[in-house]
Length: 534
Image (cartoon, rainbow, N blue to C red; front, top):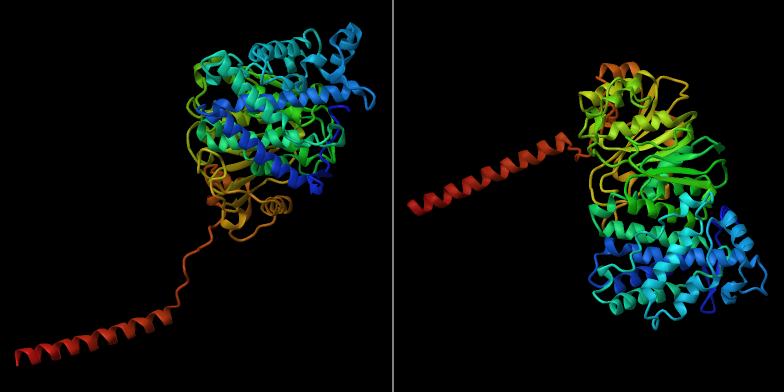
């Protein structure tokens, strides 16, 4: 099996003697994984412990993936049962060139799981295996994509316990738990379950970890909308880019939403947080993207941008961090940077939002689109942000601004916006869509969500560019200039009056009846008083 094959295929599998759909198996699998994660972590914070469950899941995946590759569909070969000594230098080199890494039979997840409970050296054995898997790529094209994948899987951490015995016990519990999960036969196109399980864990950890976890994860429903916006109308895309990649979920949504079409050169992204950078690379592998089809870089996108030689990109998707600090004007060279120079001003040092937007615009191709989540304040504030909006509007780069519902994101209840940028507009209008009302979201226990129907409705509005009362309106850029380049949706789309409609005639009748009753009561009271005073 080749890693970059499409695998999102719904199939039925047998479970417990009955036929279970992929959706049903996926739901059961997710429940089991979350149960393992909660039972095993003990007193360890969920967001801190995520690496052990996610890392173990990844270890199992690449082991089964590699075994499947080495067996080549031959039922007579059981790679896990072979002796390491039969592996020649040529066999190893050939495998690394194709898969990007190498795992000896003795290093496979299933071999380690067999004796995990009794292995007194489990933590050090795992560390050695992880190091050797990473080192197997040294000197090969895959080195960048493999190096440091297991860096956050610290088998010696005191989070696992104070003694070696305690550490091994907790590691063994995680390994046994993951080993007991039924993913079906690898060769039967069930490997999508690994990726789904991984996304499920990330989202649940993020949701339960508050801001510390949520800052790394864009909810799948929002990711789906952004991916559809960025790829709308395109039958092929040269490559996809996310300048604030996080866990890689936005890039992978493009793969899912654009699966029927061609993405020629793969997926690119940059992430500043080392832990999340590793999550993103693992996520790529787990979603069946081979090392030669993705490139995730570690570093500060705004001051140390990668992929200048790879641009332009036909699709850019991003949920940059909300209004973070950046060096801005403290670095006088940045005003001459090709990304920021055309606007004539830098984003404020305390609010980097427009720095990410200008960076994305610079990386965008003449035929593509960028869909970027925005903090609402950047759409109407004055100063440098107003000047940047003027540059974007005057040069006709803004296609659509969409106001989304509140409480869609983990860790914040703010109603965010999505800005869609394009360099190939055929008119000078900017479309504004109000998708914040209840008809555009579903209330859930912790967060609101966008259903597939909600996303479909938003995409129809985006595609048709038709004005719809209280919902959408296209405005010429000259009108926006008159409004001081305000790009807030509420400035152009009239809000629906949801107040109760009062019939004045009915109200007057009720008032008359009330006055009549008051007069009657007063007369009765006066009568009673007169009798008392008698």
